[in-house]
Amino acid sequence: MTRGATGARLEDFPVQVPVSVQWADIDMYGHANNAVYYQWFDTAINRWLYDGGDIDPMTAPAVGVVGESACTFEAEIVFGHEVVVGLAVRALGRSSITYVLGAFDLTSGRRAAVGHWVHVYVVRGGPPTDVPAPIARMAATARADLEPIMLRKL
Image (cartoon, rainbow, N blue to C red; front, side, top):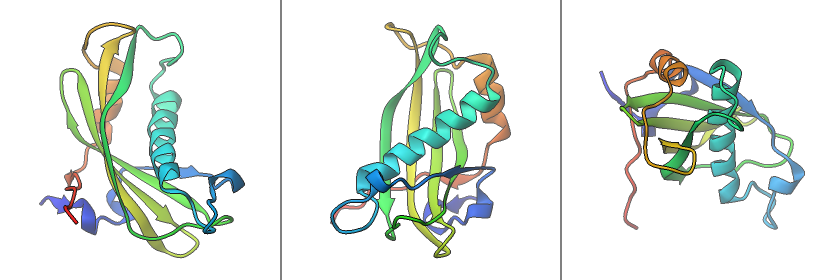
């Protein structure tokens, strides 16, 4: 059964990566700035790949670049709270990986945001290429049947 990302709970994500709320993440209103959620998503994906992919992103011949991203914000996060990013692979293509992500505020017990992220693999400085085999193997272990978020017109 496909579960929409809008109803996803932390336990629905096969990968969970803690992220740190830094003082510099907080805006003049006292909560994490919207752009910080994207940084957390990027950090969670790259931390997971770096830790388990046996690939050095600084020297790898193929790199994942962000072809698309989106985020729906649901609740504020403030300094001092504990945050975990849930990560699931929705689709694994020849040259791309589509992730569904959720930012969960463990301190308040709320989901703060859901998003999706598409990495397209390219030869460093060149055209698209196959997802590197070690990363494709990792992606296969993080599959979950969560639908990507749909952007809403307001």
